Amino acid sequence: MLQLAESDADKGNMHFRLAMALQGLGIKDKNNQSFQEAATSSRPRLQLDPKLTTVRFNWGVTLARLHQDDAAHAQFSAFSKRTLGTLAA
Image (tube, rainbow, N blue to C red; front, side):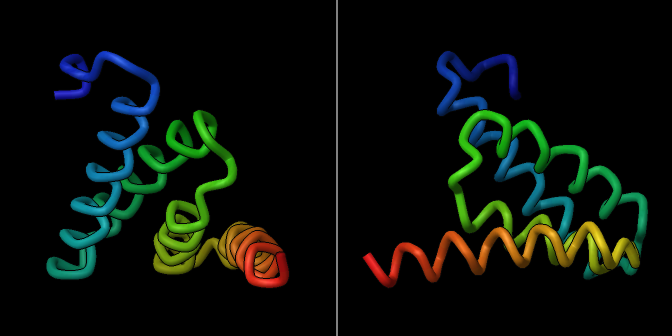
């Protein structure tokens, strides 16, 4: 399906949707493999646009589910800084 995406924005949206679907499967099925795949799919989306707070937050949730606490904390911190910066502006 990713092959159908024509622009970087389209590719990024596909990565995000895939990551969210995999995260949902991981939660539903209590399956760490789905969380691993969700984490892998989140990284390209952030590389295309590092300012996306929703992606950072959800990647943090995925990393926390994988017990990668330091990495999850880093994503939540980046999310908080970006969100608080947006609210203050």
